[in-house]
Image (tube, rainbow, N blue to C red; front, top):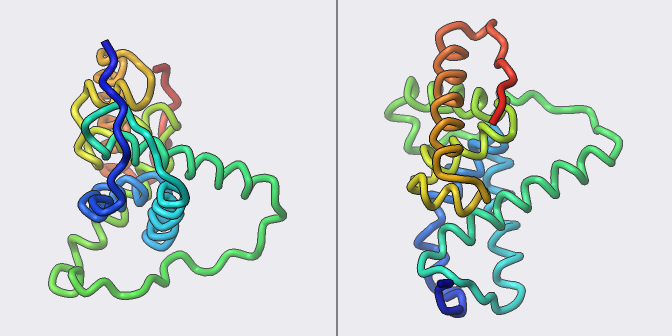
Length: 175
């Protein structure tokens, strides 16, 4: 039985900005790209009234965020690549000023997550970064809950290996 449709409440979108930002950061590996991705997601969602089937807006918003990310990557691949600026130059984060070691570690973890194979990265972002349950992540990613469980387990192992030994390569795995 499917849940009845309802209209997405634009007034409550701000309630989810932190979770979306963390998910976007993990997908893109860059804070600046994450901010742009969240902004683009909100612009798409607010462009016209949206009808959704579940009670929680986060699942829908994460799906839009992920689709927007994939679309932007495809569009970027089709364009001629500009000369990249130094990624290490990021604007200061006021919350990171009191804990620079935590900010550096978060930046490193998100960079490792961004380099994971897509199936593992998406599952890890949905569960560990956005805070969805395994069931919610399975619905979002159109997979079985057991599949999400194994992908998250494997993704965590790959991230742990990369954090222990930055020179180790992320192994491609099956989902």
